[in-house]
Length: 392
Image (cartoon, rainbow, N blue to C red; front, side, top):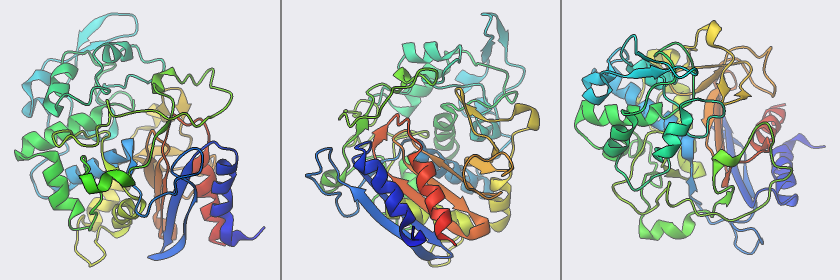
């Protein structure tokens, strides 16, 4: 088998099995395209081609973008990693911790900005299997109600107990939504305006934002998958993945100019997100403007999770070999890795099976886009593995 088309072959396999409608990707190495392309179509019956500059709901790939903005503010002296959350919102001043046995105790210290960046604040998500405070989030539709403002979301969150003492565990959570709230309070500006000024305009990411213009709507890819991601059980996964069309506008509105979050909500294209990911290699735009210093890049990529809090898990799903830096996962031990990677490779993914990675050792940047909420298949792993094979 030729190695020159491995990624196309890998993507086409999932399309032929009718497990995804359309998949798009681009991988660059040392600033040059290694591979880019698409497979499938925008819709399930293959009658609607993937549009040029297709737009995707990137869900949690919003998190690294917002985290980088926070680090830019740290470099500017407008925010500090050791700042306490109650400095920005007093509703979080007297948090309580609910133990699995039902006992409540005061938080031993306030939550810090670093806790928010590393998901060690004590928060959770509604869909985190086995988390004892997740039902409380579910009861108030904390993450799923896209009609409420970010401030209103924080007011609801502050009434909920923490799952553990701040700093004592890693638990994937709404922490980046809280970080977005902190950013707005620290600056007195809206998150969307800050992102546009400090990231999207310098990087020429013209199709990335929380709200789509009317002329962008026809480029938004349809969504498939499960209507409620909480119904996916890792202990009893479905036997197959089918192309069921779903409407996610309630959680992910496309035309609400007031909607903004830190943990999800951005729309982007493959080429736009590649510009952001490429910047994370050297901290610079394509024209050489410095966005993040070399020192911040090194600090950002370092694992911050103590060994006794490893391995990382998203619910019951482990991430063997990975630690967590200030923007997302980072490979710290390829001796535990379950797919091709290098020490120092970092990035993140989204709930609709979008994915990106940055590998400084190979000067490699990859972005994979599709729209399937709650995928049970290792599509991104298969495509990333194919990309590494193409290096040879």
